[in-house]
Image 1: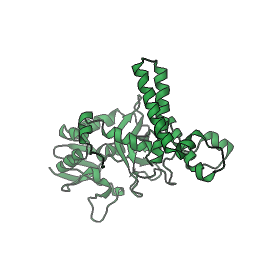
Image 2: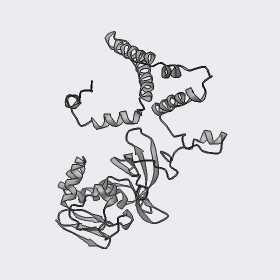
Image 3: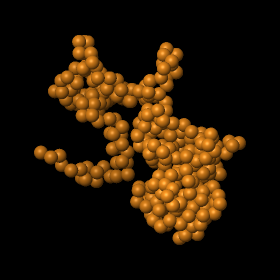
Image 4: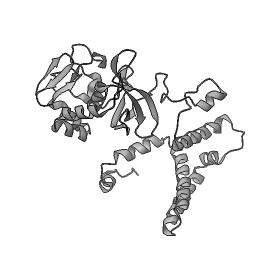
Length: 313
């Protein structure tokens, strides 16, 4: 299959036109690796806005675990994308709000704008791509810093006028070096005008993780302060292990003794808290745990268990 570079219009023999994109032949080019590809000699940046597509690209995308994307390619990828793009309620300037969200933590990473081409490129490349209103051009997050956001799924809201890129960030998202662009609590700003980059917009689970981390830091920085329960657990690993076993047992009992669901929720909260203290001692983040769970979604639990290596003795 071959493609042709035509001003403003990409066309391939079997995929048809892709409005707004310029494609050209490039053997074995993969859109997944767009950050390092270019159709122009010496130009390796997204800002060239020349994108490559061919049959081998589809195969490589499939090999990179995007089954739905390879299916689109097999079923005339472009018409389906064009139909979807037509369904979005673009504003008078052809834009829609695009929000990037961490697929594992749920954290809102950043907000920008996307037009038809930005959304089409994000679908194909699986890299969060936006439209810069100040530069009047497309830009892919990470094209300069290499801190890409690898997109796992894309959601449209009920009115189809805003977009969520659900993905995994590679490094910090904010240009300040913060994990996300949202680290300014309005209530904190009312008390103290200066924003703190470690004050992220966290959900309950990650607020708890942050508190546990803070208690661990206080062990050395505030040695004379009366220890909290969390600090006691950090200082006594045997106590911590016994509490994890105890809370697990009490959770099991809620099922065996047919206790009500509020009791089960309470025991699970106790178990989760103590387990998170243990994870902190092991320097394991909850994000890592959730990433493991996500990767198991498409795998049989029995197969996954059989594939694990026996721990070394």
